[in-house]
Length: 306
Image 1: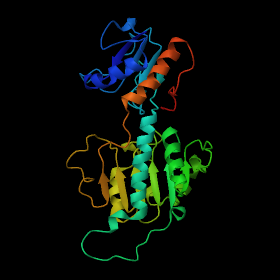
Image 2 (image 1 turned 180 degrees about the horizontal axis):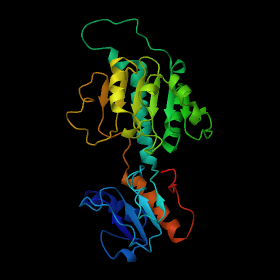
Image 3 (image 1 turned 120 degrees about the vertical axis):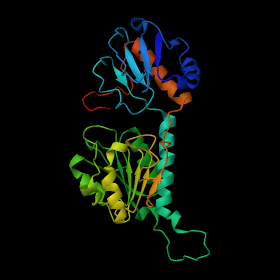
Image 4 (image 1 turned 30 degrees about the horizontal axis):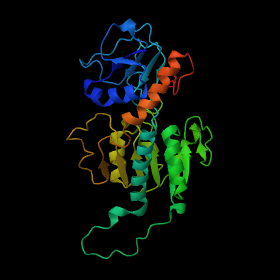
């Protein structure tokens, strides 16, 4: 099976050994005649001249396997007719759970309320987790994992998704119940994909629905929140703090007001990294399924965009 590594060259040294170990039967290469490839392993940034990849010549490719969970930078490519699969990596899910749980616990316990300045601030005891309402926007693979972990710690967790598809052990509100989902969210965790329906989902009106002093944790996509509306809302303590890991422009420009706002914590898109050692196993399974004409894992619905 001949596979093109259609990803930036800087990824080759980490990914090539992992992919070859997970799928020894493949011939993995970075160049060759397009019609000679049975599959593509893809990541944004390829080609590295800044042009958009033309998938048309890859007439024999049975699958395009994305290295990343987000596919918004490829799914709209009009030349892509091959089946596209997003990456659902156990290591990525674990990383997202750890990130969201850590920041949720920090907000819940008020860890930033205790500067080491010699002042004894008794009387700021946080509630128990069972008395803290958390909402997770986006109940896909990552959202379900985060919600289950926080519920296991005792938090009062609810999820929201457009479909409202049931999740065992977690109440899930459907599309038209977004206002209810936000109104209860003392801690709001955003894990939605970037689609036309989710862009600027959290605008001024919806941010105003959050409880006063709420914490917003966005580890989904930077386009979910209206930046200007968020800054204005933070000035009113409504919400009270935002932990942002994803942005419309990355890296976040040094002069962006998020860097200097006292109610914003910026992290550099580290919530969930795709790890070659675990992700290569998922890619290998899809390569084998493609060659056997079997159903592919995590195939992207082009209409929904994910």
